[in-house]
Each structure stands twice: as C-alpha cells, then as structure tokens.
Image 1 (cartoon, helix red, strand yellow):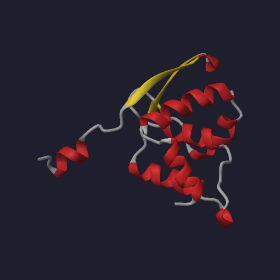
Image 2 (cartoon, helix red, strand yellow):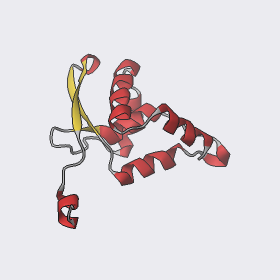
Image 3 (spheres, helix red, strand yellow):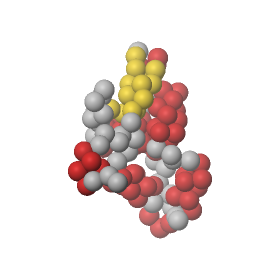
Length: 115
C-alpha cells in the first residue's frame, strides 16, 4: 500500500512532446493537477446557464503547456495572446492535452450541460 509521502512525492503529471511547426518547434503538454482541472471546468460554467467557450483552446493550452520539467510556462493572463495564434497549432496542442487529461467528448458535453 502506498504511503502518504509516496503519493505526495510522486511525479504523476506525465508530459508529452508535441511538434508545432506553426510555432517553429516543439512544446511539452502535461496533465492537469486536480485543482487545475476543477478550475478549468468551473471556468466553462458561464453566467445565467450559458457556457463559456470563449478562447477555450487557448485557456486549456495555458494550463497544459509546460517546460521539460513539467512547469507551466504560461499564466492565465497569457490566454488572450495565445488565442491569437494559429488555430491549427492550438488544435494540435488541445487534442494532446485533451487525451492526456482524459477529457473526453462526453466530459465536455457534461460541462456544457452544466452537470
């Protein structure tokens, strides 16, 4: 059985290198922490039961693009600027981030439905 220390010290945020030719190189994409996932899902909940899909790919990319050690390289304030970058590049990063995080189309539909 795992101990508390073993769990808390584990590197459980796997990352994957993603080629992004539109940006001239590669980035790492990682899994979210539990807190980040909750915050992202809450950010999807708009006002008055409307879904907030504004800049969703860039917002997800901000949370998942990292350096080789797994440290995020963007902060929330960068989402607008990142959203102005290539849609193809963001789609590629988003698809990997979605897969790594087990963020299925079903999960997306639950969020969109407000569940």
